[in-house]
Image (tube, rainbow over all chains, first blue to last red):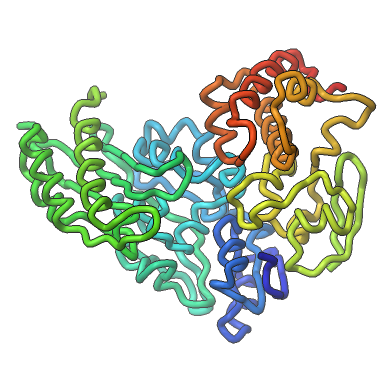
Length: 289
Length: 160
């Protein structure tokens, strides 16, 4: 469907962009890569009065890796992440998951900040941010603030951001080199929306028991979620077959997914457990560095 | 709004409403109807064009966002008489039937092979999975892409 009518501005500074968003009646919207937001407008899920394009604002894209953080600028595209070989060392969960994001052409324009703001529960980046306990840097009319990923997602396609707030970057806390991780996603065609997905990481103590277990799930709720029962089933245990099966049962038991034309609720419950099992097998058997 | 960019090596200036997608601008303002519009929401890949070297979906980009860009459409793949090696391979392998998806297939594969002339069959399959074709079953498209690879490896992928 053709897009609804809107005005368009492409400011050259963040301050100007925030001012444009704040000046409207709340129906002005920022646009990053537009790979989700243009379809949202085509389907009339949003009819903004003004689109504020972030593409001319300097310093919004790029990947910085320090001892404390992997900081990804909001306008960094999927393809920029996949092209950056440093991530496989610094935060290997990220490229493994991003490999499932959409198709070739979409990855050339879609952005990390746009995906977080779009807050699609079927998308990879929101669940990655939640699982890795990332922080989101935001600028708005009242100034800067930091939003923990756990406080960003409030519902399907909904966030706690104010209408005048723009995501500047997402910061993933740096990983110990020995951290174990797994990612599994299932969709009918690679690159399509996930029917379910699991992202996880944990560390091991000197006796080989899992600690700091964090498991996030895709496409089984209105928002990205952590699988707390499955995390508890693994915490302090060696990740062996019995522990993996316990976590799988816990995961299938704790989620309450919706049914849609793509999959029934029962199927999704079963699928998320199966994917968790596979992700844990891959995490626990991957050769340590 | 007035927007200037380059299409197939030619500088153009158009006057469009902000809601005009690049796809509609190419077709209706510039009469470049080789770019096809299928789903209009980024699923089918038929409208793929090359913007500053990257394959993008022209239904998911506004014409006003093309300011200053260099754009190649299917019409621009071969500026001379005759077909490029990729187009020739499509013909040889019967990689099209109705032809609706073909412009998007050609632009996508041209962008891919220009950047990755040694792309594996798996890589080609993965990339093409974002372009829907309801006639061919894809096998002949993959065969054509594999056949055309050598011309990109020798730097002659854009020569007709």
